[in-house]
Image (cartoon, rainbow, N blue to C red; front, side, top):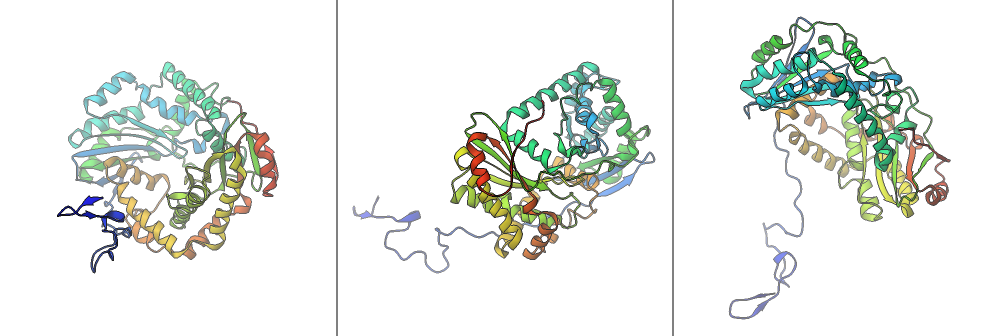
Length: 483
């Protein structure tokens, strides 16, 4: 209540409108109605200049002159876990992480001090498809940074104490994954979605048995086979001209000889498991909630209908206003959050729906999630849903390219996943052409709700009966692998 001039009282309605008034006049926006999305801001992906060196190493330069910074990403295309046999599982991750342990010229601490002197730090990432070694510094320090990165990947020392320390960390992480219900559910879902022998059947960091004998000699041998210039891309993104960048990369990496890493990956096939069309139950004693995963094998990153699948996922469970969120959270009150995701990799990674609910609503949550998947798959999205998904993806695209490190990561994807050179330059234009029919067709070609596996990690005595009553399929107990 506010006091009007002269001492009288003036009542105010919602959002400051005087009670009893007729609302905003002509040309004034009604404050009780949220504004619609505005037009997308213009954005131009930088032109990429790419060139091979005499030793086979490829250089890709993406100029970005907004900041006096430059990022270098050395991408080892055969260094990922996706081409590692089961007996060596986790060795790619171990080798990638051990690169930080120093070179034949200096120890890990000396390497860290040298990078610190440049105002840079080393970032190491080993995934299913590649190893990336990167750093960012002021543009004038590019030659010195390139020299250090070349030393890391061309002359790794892999000292035994460092390898042993990192191996013990991976083994501890495996035990932790088994105790944490969310990651346990992720691992068990992939275990039934993929056949044994397929790398995606197991965790990225390996298994307890495969890491048992992973010593410095095995790591060094692995790197010798997998790391080499003919299967390496050096991406330079930032405030530097293409010709100068290529010249400096050749100065740092030009003497690297091909002793390994010559063959492109692709030798281990990805095979579906036999776990679809049923419910797998992992008993977790005294659990007060259940972790739910529903999914199957999805599509590779370079799938020709990639954007249609992105829109499908966004509508189903990729944003806060997705179907899964509006149903399981807003309508049913089962959960704080539900999401879906394609894990796009060089080969067909998993498609998973994920949520966590209290034990008493486990079966209803599974029923509702399956219903949303089936409904969108059978009927396709509405034009409004497609428009909302396109607006979201169009809007966040530039936000993921604001730094030189983000730009270098996107350019790296072109080589890791064998994407067209203009993939990102034409991304938003192609996204604007996605239609409800195209989304439905793409989802129908890749997914089948009737073949999806349902994995529940929770209290088996309390949830097994209600899950059987769903009639989805048999409920089978799944034992976690040894950590």
